[in-house]
Length: 247
Image 1 (tube, one colour):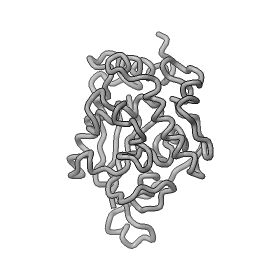
Image 2 (cartoon, helix red, strand yellow):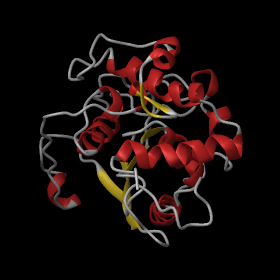
Image 3 (cartoon, one colour):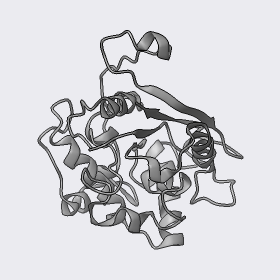
């Protein structure tokens, strides 16, 4: 059927999203530029010291139109360790405890690999919307209460759709939401200050949980001021999940 790779599957969604909402490849590229800007100052990152421009993103070769090479995460080797225990026990440990305020999983109708082409809306990720609703209810917060978002960014278009599903902006408006550096450190909602999977490493999102922990503790390499709540999302386009971590 011609859809033999994750990139090919996501490309179908990206093309429909562009058609429905007027988004462009450059809009997707702004996600990659922000991630690589953050990775460039992260010594742990695969692309440490290697920022990119939007022009370089646009000039990178096609993988599956409309996805350029720089819309796709790299293959990575690496490891992440996460220690989970009770709040009571964590109080006696040497590091500042980070509390799981919300943890949720979600699966959409006609769920398939990367997305489903049998849904009425190919431009949506309803399973992420389900996760968002559960997270906000469990944590007792709204999207505006989040200071840092660590979003699963294996492909840039899914970052825009996640912002919409999670309620940070209306459907179809993410391209405007991310304009003007809004998702960079210093912007309204910093996304992936470690560089994300596009810039730091693709370790199936586990490095995102570690990054969220560092932000709550105030030990992140690219710190964001006054962090109270950090959102973390997992694999998008498949049955997915998310966390809200707080101090």
